[in-house]
Length: 251
Ligand code: SAH
Image (cartoon, rainbow, N blue to C red; front, top):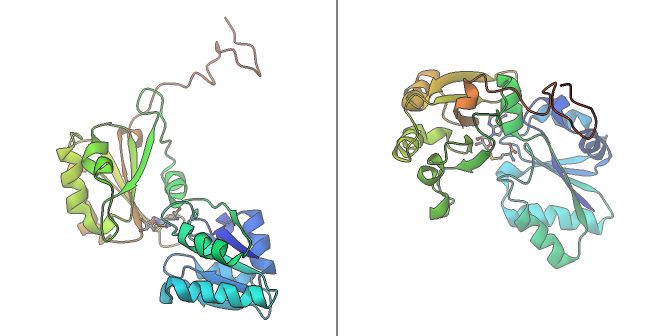
C-alpha cells in the first residue's frame, strides 16, 4: 500500500498525528526533498529506505513504489504542505491505478495556512473579503487564460500565490493591471514555520522592490489583500445578539 502524506509547511510538529504514525510504520519513504523538512525523517523506523524525489523523475518514483509493493512493503510518499495543492499526486495515482496498487491520502497543513498563522492573519475578514483565491503565475506550467492573475485581481478578494516568488515584478504588474490598488496590503512569507522563516510586509506597489531587498526569490508565498491590514467588522457568529443553533442571542 502507498500512503500519500502531507508533511505540513515545515515545522516538524505540524504534520498530522495520522501522517506521523504512517511515517513511523513505513518500510519506504519517498520525500519531496526540495521542500519537506528533513527533520521529519527522524520518525523513520530502523531499516526504512529513504528516497529523495527531488532527484527522481516520475517513472523512478513509481518504480520504487512497485518494488516495495511486490515485497509486501508499505510506502509513504511525503509531500510538502497538503498534497492536493501543486503536489503532482494525480499522475502518481493514475500510474498506481493502472497497476492495481492501493493507496490513500492523508491531508497536511498547507503552507498558505502556515503563513497565515505566522502573520496571525485571517483571510476571510467580514467587511473586507469572504473569499480566498489560491493561484500562481504561469511558469513552465501554464495557467489557463481565464485564471490569469490579472483576471483574479479584479475581484479584490484575498489572494495567496504559490510558486511565484521568483517573478515578483510580473506579479506586481499583473495585479496592478487587473485593477488592484498600489496601496493594497501585501506580504511575502519565506519558509513559513521553518526556523529561518522571514516575513516581509509591503504593498502591491512595492512587492518587487521589497522582495529584492529581502533576497526572497523562492520557497515563499505572496499574500495580497486588505485582510493583511484591516481590522474588519466583527463577525456575526460571535455577535452577542446573534442567535445560532447553539446559543440564544441577547436583545
Ligand atoms: N503542497 C504545498 C505547495 C507545493 S508548491 C502546500 O500545500 O504548501 C511549492 C510552493 O509552495 C513554493 O514555491 C512556495 O510558494 C510554497 N511553499 C511551500 N512551503 C512553504 C513554506 N513553508 N513557506 C512559504 N511558502 C511555501
